[in-house]
Image 1 (cartoon, rainbow, N blue to C red):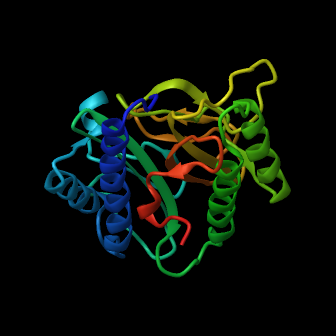
Image 2 (tube, rainbow, N blue to C red; image 1 turned 90 degrees about the horizontal axis):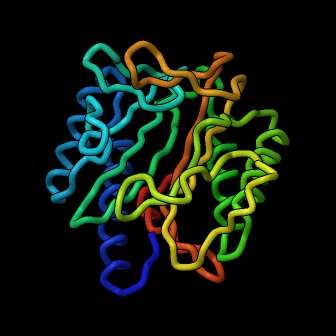
Amino acid sequence: MSITKESELVGMQKISEVVATTLKLMRDYAKIGMSTKELDDYGGTLLKEYGAKSAPFETYGFPGYTCISINKEAAHGIPSKKNILKEGDLINIDVSAELNGFWSDNGGSFVLGKDLNNHQPLVNASKYILQKAINRIKGGVKIADVGHLIETEAKKKGFKVIENLAGHGVGRSLHEAPDNILNYRVRSNRERFKKNTTVAIETFISTRSNTAVELNDGWTLVGNRGGYVSQHEHTILITDAAPVILTQANGIWN
């Protein structure tokens, strides 16, 4: 969305603080032996306490308050009593919500407990690349150039990007224009980031796959060639200089 007055900025700041804090608290709450349903219920309780509504639940009828993807699930993992968290799991939590007509989105991957399966290098790469991409963004910068940066940095670290998952505009709804802030360069895309707009920037860094495919449950996405995916996401306000990171409170870079 385009921020045209102070009340809109305040609205985006409030909901961004809610989703960011919820993500951080959920990450801290995750424990070995806990089900992803229990973790999601905790996140849902937090959102309700803030007066916010789960975006995937409200918008798409998603069977959960948050998306919790485990190990080889790339995105949109359904919280379940059957999915029990284990030492060394690669976990992704994606929290998006609405409050007073404003929407915000953020997410992050992390390793639970000891890094038994050597997932940490992938997680670290995803964090680093998101930070580098966001630092490049300001009004007038080509969206395709940021996609090129993300893909190039992933390759430098020995990883790939998921090409059919992308960042997007956010604000008055969960997904707005620009609707495809991709993790690679599309040379024909001449669209540029616009000053005073809010967007969700997210990395999808992969060990083996370059495309996400949907499982039979109609939600869960996995890599087309297997392997693992790490995602990190911030909602930002674009300026003429460094972006304002509205979801900073999630602590995904800490």
